[in-house]
Length: 252
Image 1: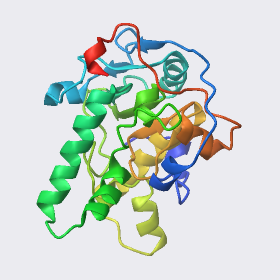
Image 2: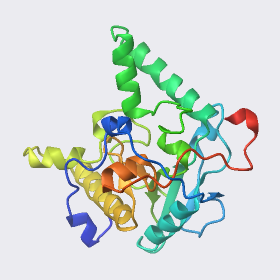
Image 3: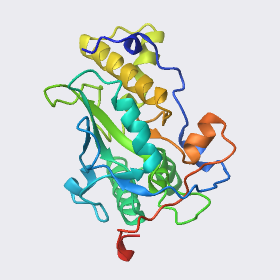
């Protein structure tokens, strides 16, 4: 278990922007920053493109993000204990991947609960997966290159226990889930306490580097995109929809 001052610092409730914040109109003034490969970063940042591994349409074999996001992640990685590293599951996301991910999640929800109406399916899907929007005024966070899905591995290469797997769509995946249980007087198991402390460390390291967390997903952090602007009160988002020069036309 990590021993650090961050593990003793609670995660605030709420932890950051929510699904409703995705609908807020935010001025976007794209700074023109390039999208870069995450394969060439320092040894304590590992690119592991999970949607490519899963075979989703539009996924690429390596992760990409805006240059400023990469620089801030490097700053965050400097705060990790010796031997620890970030494992990035997803960064910049093509619209083709966003659509296949959205459609797949909506199908899973419908299969799990056939009683859900179309509007209920839409609401529950967008809480977990942003709409595959081609509207430049309302881009999906990952389509800007400003959003990252990631976790932390220890010196043995094992992912730290966070209470749920990456991409879990359960209540337990909410960043402040264990904080809320603790505040309600619930008894936490040893595993729960480990997950609580790991989440605290992860959350505060990322915020110290300039990121904000999407409150429904402990693994999702943003910088520069509209969710970041909503959370920080910035005048505008500095990242809009991005299409790296290396991406083939049919992947958009």
